[in-house]
Image (cartoon, rainbow, N blue to C red; front, side, top):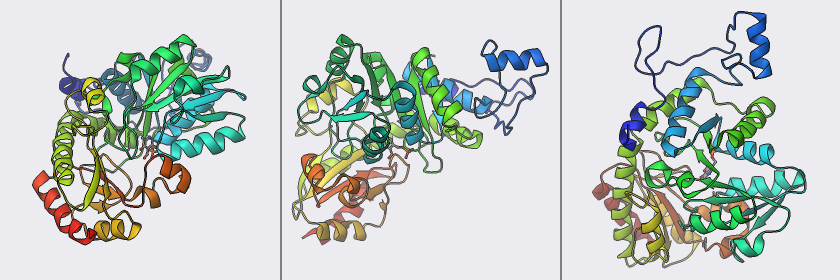
Length: 390
Ligand SMILES: Cc1ncc(COP(=O)(O)O)c(C=O)c1O
């Protein structure tokens, strides 16, 4: 199985040994009968492999972990109840009090809030390396370097090869949140990143009906994250949700192609519109990192588009967003349905005005998650709504 499209369908999937079912069944059981005391003891000692209790592992969840590991080119993966649970498991599993996380922002607001609030209460320091650069932000206490493969909401990229080179020279662990790109566009582990993380809630699930997260990478790192995240924090993914992700991922490459084509058409339309002063889309030749995007991303530039209204005020953004009919006003992303949001008042409201200004998130900034509807219908909806921007 060399093609991603084939692996998205088949990886992690084995006909059920009892029934022959092709689709991985939902194993809705909390406990597993291990048969003998000796086997139970071995499972708990970690000297035997098998299922004992769903918080530690479940066959439906394991199939999903195998599928994501395959797509990301990872030896191992562990799934969680949300992207945020995955992030917490990495932070709590790999760091100790006194350690620092250097991150290149802007990050998803919840991740940054987690680093700054929970992290700092646990004696971890979060260092925002966005302005002064990674090299200048690393200290002897830095342990982890955190990046998002496409930043939210301004859709910038980081040169991952540079990040890896800097981190490796100092023995640091690198984590890339690949939620926005998915393994269809970018596989960070192939570039030397140590751990890749997803909010599966977004493109991997793709249908806006399940919450989940996953971390993939080298087996010892994943084992440490698994132990903390499942045995100690208890953030395990439920088997019914795992089933939805297994089903969703089968169409991920097809959906990503449609998201990318739709977003490119929407970005072109917005770039030519008189009420729009800037469009943030890495596929546009005007994007400051278009060349880097062409180098890093395969098969498209993603399904997210950010744009700023010429009338750069919250009232103008509200008038446009409230007039949209096809785009739902909602904060998630990566669904087959198109979604639109105002980051300054929602996803990035907790950052505060100063940090938002530093990240270029103005009051007239609108973020679109372009779904798989026909781009002409999406553009017609935007054209109608933008009449309210003047
Ligand atoms: C890039 C990114 N990472 C992580 C998360 C957190 O994921 P979840 O909402 O599944 O906890 C999000 C959520 O929006 C996100 O956009």
